[in-house]
Each structure stands twice: as C-alpha cells, then as structure tokens.
Image 1 (cartoon, rainbow, N blue to C red):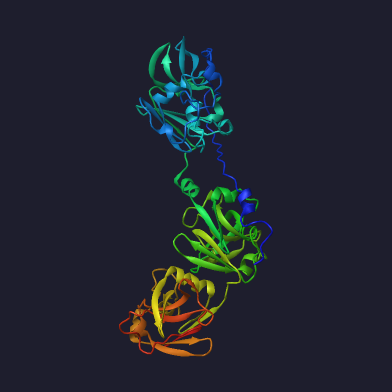
Image 2 (cartoon, rainbow, N blue to C red):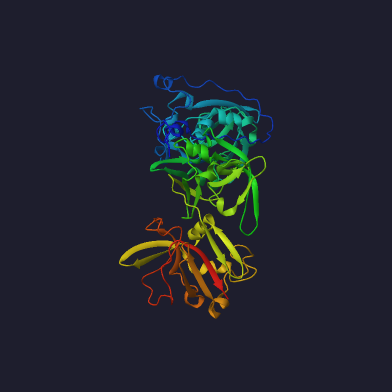
Length: 508
C-alpha cells in the first residue's frame, strides 16, 4: 500500500470541525404590549469591564466552568437546553453586581406603571444554549434569531411558551424586585402578559437533545490503517469535504428490501486520505456487538453503480444505534441495491490491512445446493462465533469459526434454508440428523472425510474455523479448516483435521 505524502490522518484531522446546532421552530404569538424600559443603574468599574455575555462570577470576573454553577444556595430555577443546569439565587445575586446583568423594566400593570428589576432571561438561556465549557454564560444570538421554543414553568404547574424569533433577546427579564419590594423569581417584560410567569421554577427549551441525538453525539468511529489509528465523532465526519447524500438500498437474505436517502462520508475518500487502497487489501468493519465483515479493496474501489458510504443519517435524521450509528451502504442515481450482509451496521471500527484479502467459495450440496461466498461465511462466524482449543501433533492453538452442524441447515431440506424463509419455519432438521445421513468434507486438494450427522448434531465443539489465534488462517490451512475442541471426551467417529476446506456434501 503506497503512502501519500501527507502524514497519516493529518488531512482529516485538520478538516474535522465541531458540529453546530441550528433549529428553526415557529410558533405564532399575540402582539406584545407597549412598555417602557427605565435606565439601568450606572455601571461601576467592574461592570464596565464586563460585557453583556460575561459570567456573574464574583470578584475575579472569570467565566464559570461547566460544573461550577451546578451548586449554589437559595432558590433555584431548572434550565433545560443543549444541556441542563440550574440558576441559583446565589449566582443571581452575584449577577446583580454588574449593570448589564441586572436591569429595570417598567410595564403597564392594570393601568399602573410598575417597575421590575432583574436579570435578562437571555443570560439564563445562555447557560444551556450551547456546549461551551469555559464560558457558561455565552449567549448565542444567532440561534435565538433562528428560532427555538422556550417554555416558562411556574411552581404551581402553569406554563407558557414562546418562540425566540417572536421576541427581542432583551424583551424579558427574570425579576426579583417589584417597585423596590423583593418577590419570588418572575418573568416579565416586553411581551404578551401570558408570558409573565410568577414564581418561576423552570425554563425549558426545544434545544434539549432527544435520546437519539445525545447517544449519537457520544459515539466515535475508530480507524486503523496499517497500524495508524484515529477516532472521529459523527459531527466531525459530517464536516468532512466528502460528506454526501444519496438514495441507496439493501435487501436482506430473507428478501426484505430497505431503501432511503442516506447521508455519510464516501468510504474510499476517507480511506485514501491516508493511504492508497489496492484491490487485494482487506477492509474489515467491526461492529459494536463484535460482528465483523471484510471487503476486498476492489469492492471499495468499485463505483460503477454508485459510491460506498459510511452512512450515519437516513432521510435527514441520525441513524439509531441499531442499525447505526454508522453503516455501509451504496448510493447513486440508480438507487444501487446490495446484499444485506454487505451492508454492515453498528460499525465501531474500520481496519485496513495491505494485501490481506483472500476470497473463496464454500460449496454445499444435499437436498439443495448453495455456494457460500466469503462474506456469508464471515457473517456466519460473526453471528455464531465459537472458539475451540485444538491440538494436533503437539501444537495447541485457538481456532474461531462456527459449528459444523449449522451448515447442514442449508442442505437438509428440499425447500427451506437458513435466513431464506419465515422465522417460524425450522432452519435445521433435527429429525433428519437424528435419523442419520453422511456428511462428506472435502479439501481443495481432494482429501476428504465422512462423518455421521448423528455424531455432530447440535455439537458446538466441532467447528468450521476461519481464524487461528485471532488472525486469518495460514496459507496451509486457509480458507477454512475443520477442527474440534480437545476437551471432547468422545470426538465424532472418523473425524480428522481437514485443511483448506472447499466443500461439504450431505448424502441422505
């Protein structure tokens, strides 16, 4: 594999950016009442040096960290947005030391001009309208202008909702004083009076991420290309220059087709940002549940009917953990459709190894015949993984594959085979196995052995292995090998180690 001039992962590391949040909800509102704002108290030397978005943090004037405002004293108002926080009375009182954080509004209350003093509501929202950890009160004015819902909740359960697009950022305050008399926290200001919520207990916003968004935000995709590693969040992947959306489909082995508009990064572009991909390289996808599937480089490079994507969006939304957060799919103008086992879901890691891919076909025959490709065999290993300790001529090794008896489900019935029928139909004929039929296993060089179905039925310790000591089989044993666990008290009669397994035949 030829390395490019740039260092591994340097290009993408420079391009990866944090995702931004943008919402545009719209709720109609009644016209606001006309009110008059009284001048704020004169700013002292400290407040003059502190702008309207700085934190109320005492003498030092430094911004509160993400955790420091979580604990306080006195009354508190629960805040929900991109994150959750509380506005404590103790921090509110600190804010009153700064002119920009404590203002006066005079409103018409039943024909009487009434003066309220308090903190602009936008400063409370600033605590939860973004992910900032170093400046907890940094207000996002653009997000306010784009529009999101804010719900004001009183202690008695009364609530009122407005959309930020319908009000100016300084329209409302959280007041603690009415005509100079202390009051419980109250929202009041330049708005319809239904938004004047007394005894305020909570401020909730539509910025609050749902469970799917929160889960997707915590996910990271790992990449290992010839030992060089990196990790990417979905937000970073989405900001890469080879993000693409397109229509694609896959069909399960049972015949169900799934189609949609997928969004993700082009697989070949992601990989070739670090190293050129050759046709005989192996690209292995490891899922969060341990499932593995390998593509040859030639498959990744094939764009004749569309582009391979590492998709994490479907019809505009994040993919859920299953079948996401990342999955492989092919997209293009003609809606390319791929086999289900080639659309790997729940991808956690991608491993690329130079000139490591070996393709093969395992031939099965009996009441029906099948040629299982490498992908199907590897999928079977991932779904029905079994590791045994095998000993031959004093050599002990760990082999990983799947139980031999599972293969018989493909050929022990003239009509049905695993994954090819309704789940209510048996995929393995126990009655036939108990009655007895011969199973012949043949190697690529013609060597073969014969076993009885009676001796291997439901025996998970006799396996067809694809890996040895965690690595692909050596050439002398590849692509598959028949082995069994050395702890078996009575191995099946006639069993012998079959290397380079090429076919399995059942005779009834």
